[in-house]
Length: 213
Image (cartoon, rainbow, N blue to C red; front, side, top):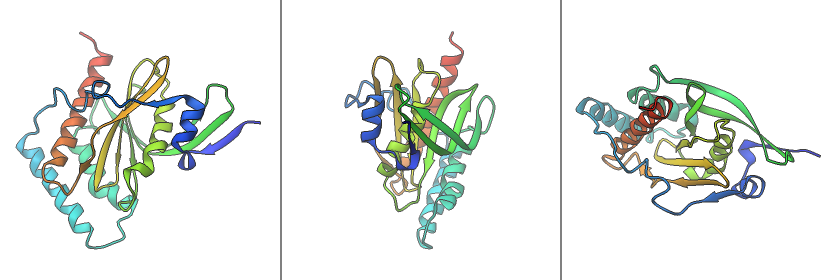
């Protein structure tokens, strides 16, 4: 009998067992969040400073729920990073079914925000309640990334609670491997600049992959 699991209930152990998911603890596997990062201009820095100030202000009026985090933090960052402009598009609240290799397990879930380019998954983003750790969304976002039909291309993801950010890379070759970046905190001065720089770098990589020289 086929087992159905909601993505919100999935665990890393489920993904390891059903998809052979493997964590790569090697800096060389995920260099995209570290190398050749673009500089952030002064205008973007001013806007990001406002995002940071707005987030800190919202902490004074709990509870800080998912919709508020998305409006105050996630959406402005995607806007500043030009993910709402061609050739990218943002599709929200898409339901995705994922089937394991032996079709013995189906994982169903809803993506909060999905950034696409020509049906290539550029960024999968889960906005969680600010009181949650990014670890709460790790298995869920990896489950969504596993459903990327373009298995020969790496998938990149980002989890944010509003207060923290982490980036992920997943590659499906002979084995399914993933790695994470360091954790970035909205409270830390300059961390949002790094988040923006990484987003811009990943968008550049996507365009270069689809349009090789």
